[in-house]
Every structure is written in structure tokens, then in C-alpha cells.
Image 1 (spheres, rainbow, N blue to C red):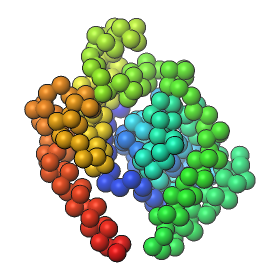
Image 2: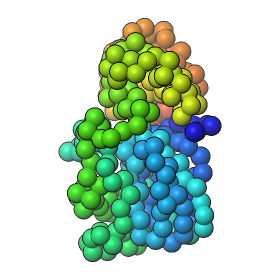
Image 3: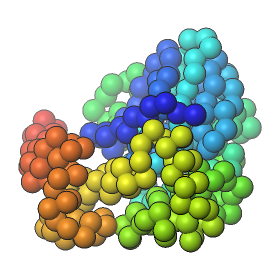
Image 4: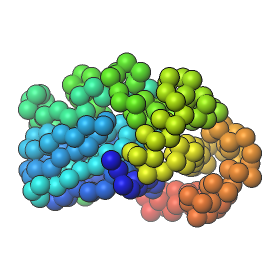
Length: 274
């Protein structure tokens, strides 16, 4: 059971860091996450299951999957988070599938093992091209890991009721979702759905759906010139006033303020590069 859940809002599309221990708090985010264990021991809660991870293990977390780590022994871990937008040819792959084998060991592939060792070199270089190099390695890593994690359509997995509820919300949050609709689609009672969701997530179903919608809205505000009204409708809000209120409650700023800050941040970054 999850007593508390953190919804992370990341500012960059690609982050990479070597750490001695992993976050010991259930969390969820719209990005993919890859954790590589070079040394140390921990356990990972993912997909409703808890598994131990050790030297050579790679954990692959798909977008909007609840996950958590428990440390047994500090060591050396590589943590990468990246937006599926960085891999346009695979964007839909991450949205409709879940990994059948989310934890693999890089000893299963000599090429993957060599690549994981190269990540450290690229990270330590701190050169102007480091991010491009890391992205190139990440793309190659995805190519090598894809057959090993064996992702399947979410409906085709033997998911728990909790996972089924989350998966349905992830695929359909832009449409109208209610307890009545979930009950009919998943063949579970409304009371059962509410109990399962509150037990695992520590938040209500409407709150979770709003997190998904606002996360999508943040992406559209940054990446498109669509009006705020159109974006609110596209992500599933029927009322602009409600969208503005929920957006402010989560981000502590209005959609217009968020867009202005994002545009300024991108301009500042370009100016530094020039």
C-alpha cells in the first residue's frame, strides 16, 4: 500500500545523473525512467510487484507508472529520465504498452553492457556535446533493450485491478472518465474502484486524471502555439474556468504564466548556446 505519492513535474526533456542511492518515495511522472545499477543493492516496486535489483540490473519505467525504491546498500546508480518526444518514432510505443520484463540485466547483451559503461564516459565529459552524445547512447540503448523488456499492449498483460485502472486512465484521460464508465469498462464495482485507487495512490481518481491532463497541457503549452482554450479542450476539460483552476492548484501559476516562463527559458538557453 502507498501511503503517499509524489507527482514529479520535470523541467527538462532529458536528465542524467549518477547517484549513490535512489529515491525512497512512491512517485510518478510523464517521462520514461531508466535506472542502471553498477553497484549496490535495492528493491524496486513497479507494476504492482516488488523485485530486488543488484549489479548489472536495469530498471525500465514507462510514463505514468507508479514506482518506488528501497535501498539496502548504497552504491553507484545511473538515473536517466527522458521525454518520449525525444524519440518520435517510439512515442506511441510508450503510450499504449507496458514492459513485460521491466527489470533486465545488461549481461544479457554484450553490446548493451559496453554501452552502459560508455554512459559514464559521456556523462563525465561535461562537453558542449554531452547531451547530444547521451541522447545518441540512449537511442541505441532503447534499440538494444526493446526486445529484452518485451513491451506488450497494456490490456494484454496480466495486470492487477489497480494497474488496469491506471492503464485505462492513461489511455483515455482526454475523454470523459467517471466511476460509472470505469465500472462498465473494467467490470468492477464503483466502490471497488474507489477503494483500490485510494488504497494504492493516496489520492482520488479525479485528482489522478487531473494530474495526467495538466501534465499533457504543460507539454502542449510549451511545444505548440495552440490557444489555452483549445488546449484545455484537447486534454479533456469541458470548462476553461475549471481547467485554469486545476492548473493553478497544481503548478501555482496560470497557464499563461507557465507558457511565458517556458518560452523565456528556451530563449535564455538558446542565447547561452550562441
